[in-house]
Image (cartoon, rainbow, N blue to C red; front, side, top):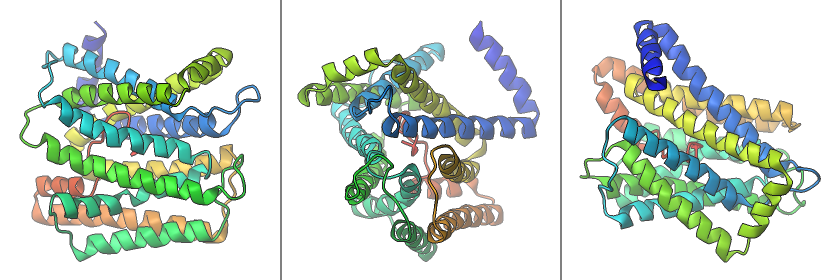
Length: 352
């Protein structure tokens, strides 16, 4: 009944292209801005005087919600529930995915949310490196120019103002930057390795998501147990139900946001998605500065403008190439090579 009503609503929306675009854009931005705000709230603000410090529990809850939703969509659409690829293929992608997400959450203990968000904009750099090493892909001078501009903007941001988290020690910002570099390296590897491992397998995106994230949930649980944190983490959320509510809302926002992303890419291609994601990141930084009092220096604003200017230039240049060649499939393939692909659910920050 609910699915039938949703299908009817989507049919009406698709009949009005402007309303449909607005629906897709507002869905992506709304869900992922909510995800960003909650991520900062959970990792940087205290609950009843206690700080949440169990990043792997956050990863675990995110993955469990994702697996449930992906399994439900497979059943609802009558698609294959059995694994299509060998278990080790799902597990290999899952390991780098969990490490990347763990680094992302841990970084917020040491650096501010604007630093973390701006750092994610540099994802294309490790994607290009891993693509060259693993897939033997080649990139043009424009791609390298955009990567250099993003690197310059991020460097300006880090060097010209405060980057440390409000509750971190004065010497922990460098460790936070190192965690972000770890996030970028493993996240870029995840995207490239995912392409390589699953090439040749006829699987739906939800089948891949369900099994990769099921392995991620298992690895997260093992991590909590081996670190002796599982009992403490459960005790924390039992003492602070509002923390559990925030964690579950964050997981739901990430998963629903991924569904919007999947629908938008399939309907309108990677160009609209890239523009929306760049805008979302900029809005997230502005909102974080307002809600959590992160004043930025002039140099940091210049760095921010350089990064987002480069990303918008890349998107607009791809659009011009697509219009000139009348070959949107080629543009989509090019964007996929640079990391502007449909990411794994739960790794939406991607964003993961």
